Image: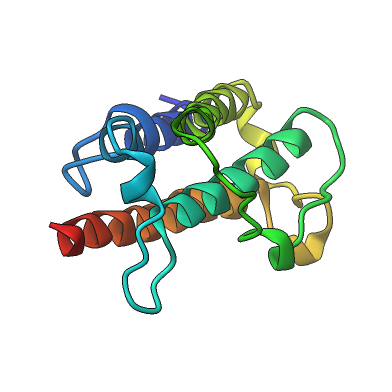
Length: 154
């Protein structure tokens, strides 16, 4: 198996269908969660809705780069969750995250293996491999937070 296929599988694991690392994934944790739960504030922690927006923000921005566009995301905007006024708006955010996850996995799988060792946009941002692995690690980090927040709500 080439590295891009392997990485795409890892992305699908954390977002869509995996149980290997965390015994869960974003789809399992979010698809049946109500808006009230997603917006529930637990102490100083981010809400599940904010974490969902945050991860989707990065997926969307990096997906644009993989599709030939510019890198135009900034950490300072990554938690600017728009007001979710309805259950439908929450479900749309979840659906968008899952759609971006699949599109990101497809884009990674479609890369030539050799590009993984190339600079990602600028040399200072590391390689494609480092950035894709960063997405996986960052996503598991926040998935763990989502799982813990859900347990704290029970």
